[in-house]
Image (cartoon, rainbow over all chains, first blue to last red; front, top):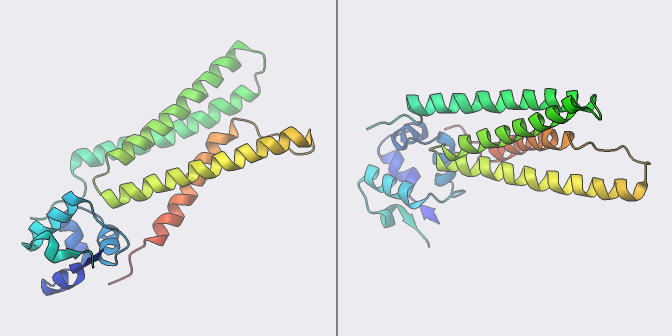
Length: 63
Length: 139
């Protein structure tokens, strides 16, 4: 699954550590999601969507 | 907006689990080694029972530590480490058991007290390898 996490994070000038703190996860988790090594669960995906104020499908895509 | 990864209750629970994991490992080693020197003895039987109970506590504390982790990715990595370690330990000890059976004294006997220690060591090694695989690059 692809995601726009790195772009969205860069737009807000957030580091991976900043995003990790906002999501209450480790930086390792944020890095794994950004690099596509790990697909987050639905609750974490919705948490990301709320944080960026975007629908989930605008952050994650299966193409 | 920002929420800490672990709140005070989580941190306390985690610390308690880590202490329980370490303490039960030490007590397991002590009881199992002592029981080896007390053959055909009630004290040896009691120590063996205690060793089994401490190994159960070890697994239980580790399980509680993993299930209470709020970071789902860390939880998955720890679970993966334990699954790999269990598979490796099961395979190695089973194969060694068959070799012992057929070699008839030509290979050293693997005492059952070492199996939990092997499992714990392999879990630690697997955790190290798996976590290294997902180490985040510097920004």
